[in-house]
Length: 198
Image 1 (spheres, helix red, strand yellow):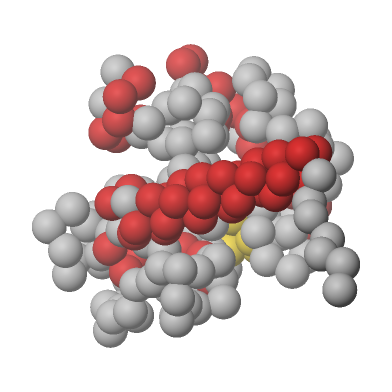
Image 2 (cartoon, one colour):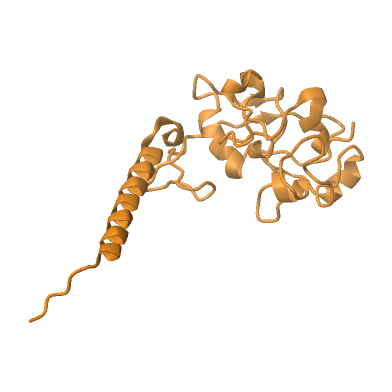
């Protein structure tokens, strides 16, 4: 009976693979369970389909009062979709929530499309206007880069706020909590002017 031995190259490849898998699993374990990610996500038993690996149990949502005026042509309702997930923590049920009275906040969960832009007259058409005017958000249109929903026509909390701070405007940015986690700087209203014709 002849024994087969691994040559030196095969042994080295096997050792490197084992080390890589160990490091990858350790890093993945650390990312899954560190405090930052865990505040919203869970690696097991996700609870909602609107966000990957969502780990927050839904709470009873209060009825919300959103900002309205005679010049708003959009239909307003309660936050839904991914904005509803944001409100699990940012509602009146937590110490860092904005409450259910959102009349002092930008409305969310409404359809922002070419028809709304035309009816309003002071909004850019999200289907053709680039989102990177005045600063980078992406390389596509407002609809492609900032709006959510199946048809990319829903303005949600994450249209302006990036909870993963991939643009560098987090709490350590010196912008203050009120400007934290934006998709672009709002110096001279850059973020606002992405959608609003002012």
